[in-house]
Length: 178
Ligand SMILES: [Zn+2]
Ligand SMILES: [Zn+2]
Image (cartoon, rainbow, N blue to C red; front, side, top):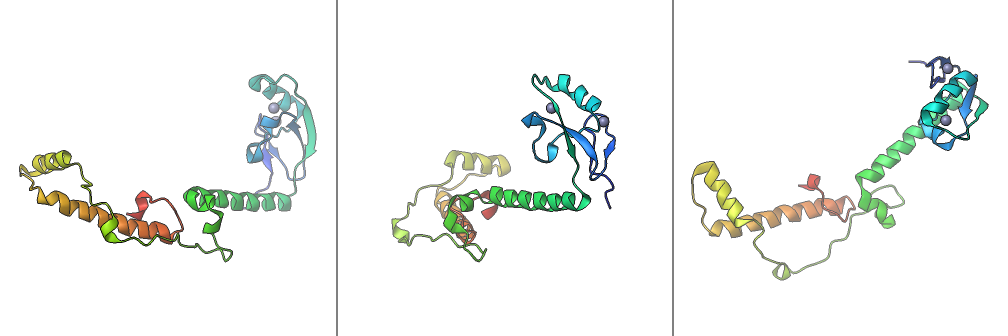
């Protein structure tokens, strides 16, 4: 859909045309990015001052961007927000500058070589909770041998998840790796 105006007046919602004159507020919090306020008239600017409790405020007369300038801004804004989302999705990758190679691909996190015999073989499940679950579910008892087998299963699942996280260049195993 072709947009025929730049913005609505922040007070009266009248359309401010591309390249049209408008009034901005000098206060910095009224001028943040795409939430910046714009007013069709000094009267409309005037009526926001008591609402936001400005003390030293004045209106600044400006002209709206042309449609082309505005569209360019939208594209840049879109790209910037995609970059922000990409960073938010992979915080570990962003923290380690080496994680992203110059080709734009992801460099897998190197995993240390470990002797399986050196890894901890602790029980990884809460035995009482596990037994309580089986009992509530079925009325059955749980043999103690189950605990070790299940702990091994958890280790196998963790190994697979670690592999996935490493492939993604992360240093944190996430829920979605399972
Ligand atoms: Zn207005
Ligand atoms: Zn203001």
